[in-house]
Amino acid sequence: QKEVEQDPGPLSVPEGAIVSLNCTYSNSAFQYFMWYRQYSRKGPELLMYTYSSGNKEDGRFTAQVDKSSKYISLFIRDSQPSDSATYLCAMRGYAGGTSYGKLTFGQGTILTVHP
Amino acid sequence: DSGVTQTPKHLITATGQRVTLRCSPRSGDLSVYWYQQSLDQGLQFLIQYYNGEERAKGNILERFSAQQFPDLHSELNLSSLELGDSALYFCASSEYGASYEQYFGPGTRLTVT
Image (cartoon, rainbow over all chains, first blue to last red):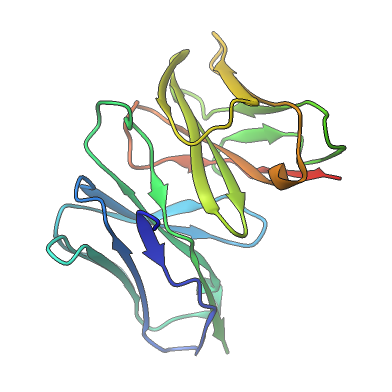
């Protein structure tokens, strides 16, 4: 079983829809939770990060972390065709030990927003 | 553009061969990370260097090795290549050793035939 599980989709929604992307994880040592966005033929880029449990909002994007359920979500409001990309969740424990800066990624969810 | 450069963009080689992938981090970044991305495994962490020293290791095969040079650029060496090594190889960099924000390069697409 993978440490981080993410439904690969693909997910297709009409422009303006609310999109919900989710990941579950099994490693209770994870403390930092990130969402990266990857456009086709490009490297991933950081979209949002959250430390421990709670919500974080940035424009049309909201990240939620529920450590008790080991579940994280990314919501995209008023989705746009330019949001079409692969969304990867990523996680990290505290720095130190053999993991240090290692990020553990989910499989990625392919999202298409059609006009 | 993240500021991280990787060369070459594409590489096609035969089984059993050895290749070297090169990465230049963003100016001022001391950490370099290598990841492998394939359809079945997703994005997998291979290894991290910080200011020339190895700091973290993932599921990197013994046939693979990496190093970070004094000018902070890094190279990933892949030897005795197998068909299953075909993948996208990304380099990422960050200012500190344990940053959640890693800046990814455009990747090197390796095809082993």
